[in-house]
Amino acid sequence: MTVPSTASSPRPLRVKELGPAEINAAMNNDPRLIIPVGTCEQHGPHLPLGCDTIIVEHLCDDLSAEYGVLRAPTVEYGVNVDTERGFPGNASLRKKTLHRMLNDLLDAWEHTGICEFILITAHGHDPHQEALATVTTMKARVRVVDIFGVNLSDLLEGQTEAMHGDEVDTSLMLFLAPELVHAESAQDYMMSREMLRRYRRGSLKVPSGSAGSIGRPSLASAEKGKLLYERIRSKISDRIFLAPASEE
Image (cartoon, one colour):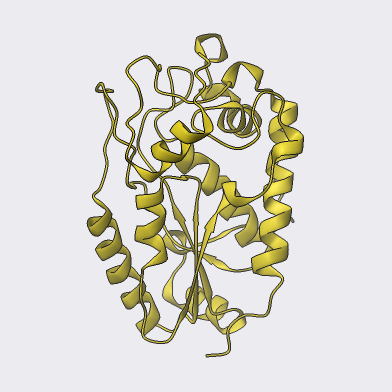
């Protein structure tokens, strides 16, 4: 599905795999840092709990390789949506915990010379987004990217926007990591627009009648996932990575 990497293909600049001299050389070329922020939560019986994490890691690796920008180790936990029933394996941070952790990390990296931080997440829960959007630095620029802020409506059949463990998530996973998807277990569960708004705000839990996902995963396909991924990557490239790096 994805094109295998070759020896001549650019590789992502993962901080955890590089030594200080290599990191310094990369920073001298481009003083930005990409930070993938995932979650560990249910997305229905057909998807792994790290669905959001897997998607943003693929995207951040591709962007790092394409633009030669350092990629930080993934923050694998976020602020989950509450659920009416428990799901084994779920692990969530409080909003203030995620916010404080990111503040500490960005402060440390800024002192080493990073001038711009690009936080990329695939989780549209408002408290999670607020934790990212309110991170502060001394001088460095902070940019927060919700990949589902990209308009995908024309590529979807049963939805007009991204939901959760849905047509979008499932299609992306079928394209990026099909071996982790159990499509035969997917269960559709739709909400009204008002319920979806309250769900994203955190005032409505994932209902007990849902298998853990919201939307129409039954309509997902790898072909659709490829189109979605290419749209997301192209829009983020245009809006974030093709803009000049901060000079401060």
